[in-house]
Image (cartoon, rainbow, N blue to C red; front, side, top):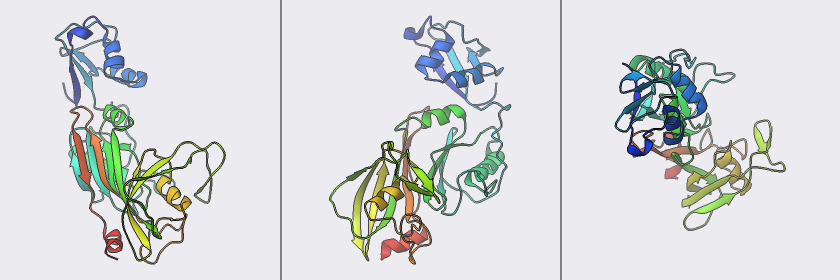
Length: 296
């Protein structure tokens, strides 16, 4: 038996239930994920033997679920060698510090020179069985902490609401005031896009941003920022809607001679490991260009 398995010892309260019921109600696995593992020859094991989802279980038995993605479902990413700044890694996930200017995953114009391709190359050298599952995203010009899962089940658990939280460092134009955490509650999705910019339309979906003022100097404000929802361009759009676009944001603001990109950095990433349930916080070092702003 090889591969990464999730193990569950059957308790008295589960005795008599089927393997399928355990997977659905106890482990919360989706129907598609259950189908994926049950058709793998080593996907579902009970006391070390292959088992059907219709089989009933007894207290004390050991149910094992294969976490390694099937070899029949490659992630189709081309490897691309690039330096990776690893903040944390275990059997199921890897956290990295993304530089500004790097795209997260392949898209038109960036078919292979992305962070996901870099992670694929790293996995090919360190853990070829791992697959690349991006958990959340950062814009190309945003730097900071990002998370990837190595298997589909870890990805599913990390994508649940509240499993991963980010805290950003941002600089906005002008001087914002307020003690403690302030809230921007302005709907966004349901917006149309013109030249990349989000434009409000009727029926936008909820979008909530929290921010805390660090200090004000030289006509700008340093901020800690958290988001309760994850809409495209949410932080940039929300601060522009206050009349305080982020420094360097040429799309929603005016650009800046002080920094060649939007002054936004995912400084802290906090997540719960999917199977050991440990709370981990990683910190991505502040890059040089934003560090210069902090010194002004």
